[in-house]
Length: 378
Image (cartoon, rainbow, N blue to C red; front, side, top):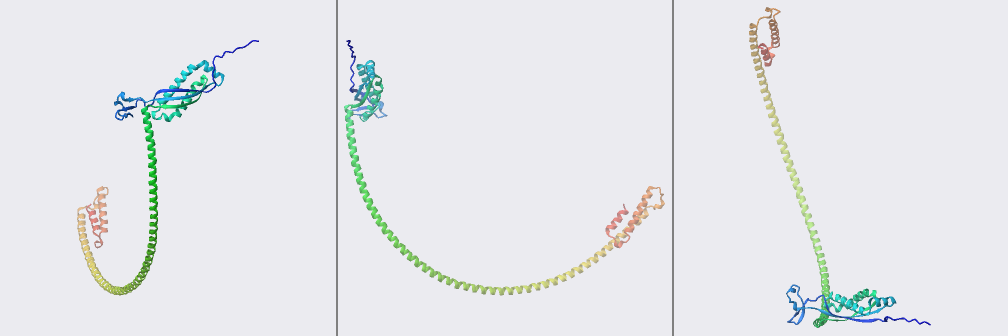
């Protein structure tokens, strides 16, 4: 019978392991932003405008100690155990875990201020758990839990924070006392306001009653005023009717008198017009007769003057005709072939025609005689 022996190289427990990882002197985000006041013997934040004037020796470095508790296990399957043993090992796991925890804690603490470190324990633990789980999963290590067990601040800061906490509690208590006083004052004010409202309601009711009484009195006064107004209106209408009738009578009387006066004036004007018309017609007839007589005399004078003028013109024409007859030769004395003789004969004929036209001197006009004379002396 042949025996088979197995060599055990490493023994790895399946139980969960708690790892304490303390990190000391972790600077916060307000590192170097505080200075030590020698008068008050405490630390104060830098004023923004005087930051460069504070000596570097007085500047204070805010350092925080953080204790982290991790719970992890290796496995649970054999492949994870092999990865842990052959890829990492216990010694290197301790060094790597210490370095990763310290680096992660320092990074997280440096991102916050010292007064908020205690308030962010759960956030730090959650962030550390996610960070370490992602980094150690390849080595077969499972991080089960991460918890910050303690955060230690410098004594001065701790005392200041404690005093701040005490002051905050006192302020909260004072705020509660103040709220209670305010509530009491509000209750008292509400009671006084309610009393005033009740008083105002009573006064409003009294005022409304007084207004109702005033309305009733006003209605009675209005009714009395309406009655008086109606009586005054009836009286005024009666007086107005009497005055209107009187005025109408006076107007009718005045119309009758005016009509009589107008008729008398119209008759008088008719008589005057007829008298003036008769006188004008008489004067017109006399003037017409007178102008007709003057016209007849003037016409007779004009006829006699015209006849005398015509006789004078006729005599002048006769004298001129005799002169022409004496100066011009007779057409019979010249030969027929003589053109000058024929033209003289034509002129003689024209003279004879003119003579025939103008021989009645008493019925010819001056224009006829002028034509006759022009023909003679042409």
